[in-house]
Image: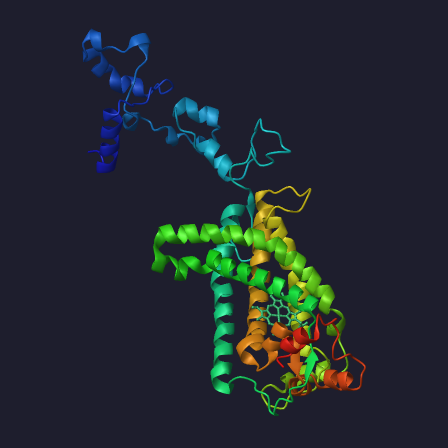
Length: 399
Ligand code: HEM
């Protein structure tokens, strides 16, 4: 009695007119010989070639003890059409021959990459290993970190509230950022926001947008954002370099930074620790976020954008670049979410400094006391940029 699946398969093969032509199965001949002899002479196959239902051919080719070691040629002789040995080699990462030039298509001869073990993956072919790292680690833990940071900031905001000025504003202004510094900062910040939003949708959008907007809209949106990401990346890279050189001088470590960090800036006690133009928290964001993570994010991003001249863009290069990029960008976003919070709703007067260029003397004294002292002592000019006209300056200063 045949098993139903076998029977159905045999039925399908017979119906589609496909049955194996058995050339090298002598054992099958005696079993089928009487039937062949009984058949009318007109039905005999031409040229002496006999066909048989492959499920009825005995013994099965797989009964051969050397079956698993057969080459594709040997297998073709006992089981015509069975290419399993070739596919096994392909699956093991073997590189075959391709007539395409290596310089233009370096991986054309290789369908499935060789086995590797990326951090956090099993030992498997590189494409699958990369998929495991992305789906089992980067997406869940990266997403969790971002949610934790947003949650912690929300707790701080609703628990402690905005950092307000303690004293009354004097109406006297100090120039905190020149127009050049602000342009550099905002170019960088705008590029960053485009990258962060598009990156988040590409990585996590299928969990929170796809169920809401459906496949078609989500597909178009992600396609659009992916292209925006590719274009905003180089803009971010250039503006990041400008931001680095613009602000590096005042972000150099100075005496008091360690004390500031140990006391957490005095944020929790409500008594802010004095600092120069930028406090140790800002310096940490500058060196950790802008400089260190900036180099990694930009370098890996330029690889993914295929903008590094002379580099050969093969799959494992892109996989490694992607994993490095994902880790560094998630850490960078976590840092800059804090920066953006303090720069907007988290601290009274901070945003105005970056928007207009000027801060009130009370703000300067309460948040950057040593800087304020230096300005008052005439060591740092209160107005550094060339004012365009007295009325424009007054307007910028909110007078
Ligand atoms: C929407 C996004 C952003 C907002 C609202 C924002 C807001 C601000 C504000 C208000 C300041 C002035 C702080 C002060 O007076 O001490 C500032 C400073 C600064 N921001 Fe941003 N920012 C944003 C994104 C970024 C990004 C993406 C970067 C770099 C990757 C960045 C780098 C800096 C730097 C280097 C400074 C000077 C202070 C320092 O060196 O730490 N900002 N930002």
